[in-house]
Image: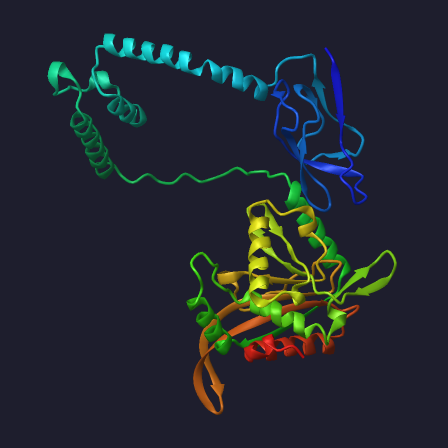
Length: 409
């Protein structure tokens, strides 16, 4: 046996170990070069690991959830010369027509000699329904089972089951017991770790303000009514992000990162907005870079692109880091108020709650307006409460007068 030892690769950015999230192969499997053999998680992102050689898997190091150090043995391959599965597939395919003819001939012979006569479609339906065709009386020539013969049998079975259900007393539900253990690994482990660190280390200052988005909703509907076929409809999010990029020019202390190792606040002139996105794997924060330099339609398209990439697990590693402030929204589940957790090392996060129509007092009269709350959190070590409130008030003013979102000052 010729052994090839594949070690955990250096995944960059100072990574010293990676967590095994999922093995894509098992011991004994034949793999081809560049076939994905595992998914591992660093502190930055999930990474698919390809096989460096073709061969048979001899051993795997670690179970899902285990940490494997960079440079430690990960997979051992036997490269003695056995053809891997991917390479063998074309050869097998070249014999497919002849093999197909043999299988088809055998199937025809078996059917011809069978006592039960029925079409392939009827046989398939019977097999899916768990019906033994030898128990069905066929009404066709020579006793051949017709589709309506099977229909009648199935209908009788349903009727009998219904009658039996009506005649017997309703069952009493048995008490449920037992537990299910779910190992916290991969992205869920990383989320748990970051949330714990953020809440433990960052004194959150929460600020909630209601915003009248009636005019903004009118503009949104007007723009959506003129969209080209296939062009994604606008949500409130691109308007909020566009307004936020304008507001942060006057509140640079909120568009900043805290470098704890150096004890330095790094204020950014460019606004790189993290868009908190719920995915099947958990919460991810893809980044819209230089959001303030994008035109409105380009901004809306980029928000949609990075969000869909994150949901489809297609976002590149660099698209999941580097934000300077985050916007989070629960969409239709937005509720009235939320307390978003800061995406460290950032110092601010803006949460978007649900927009609903409700009665408000305007100019001394009760009227119906569309209202939405903004729930924000700030790192109180570096953003004073007054500045936090002033920033959200400035954002509120832009959203309530949407023309100002598009005015460059």
